[in-house]
Image (cartoon, one colour):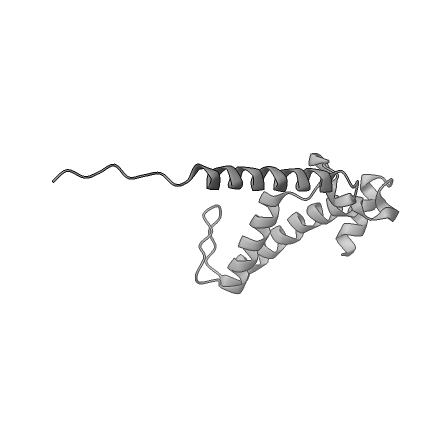
Length: 122
């Protein structure tokens, strides 16, 4: 049995989608030009997504200690494991908070040591 080739959809629908995507891109780009803090791209000064994900992963290990296994270190005591994880989380969070403080007006021109001190308090 010979099958007939399927017909492609109406080309006008693809053109409409393309037009919609172009309009959406234009809207986003014009929104970025409003010069808000969130639109500023200072890659070295923004919290690191990878670090935030790692913090969340480690917090999940604290919440569900029997479910998650840590590959980089071995402990035989839940108390010691939790203590090591929490120390690691506090260190990583302090670094990310220090970066985020740059976006508060009172810290945007301060030295890194003052931001680190404030981050440790948070």
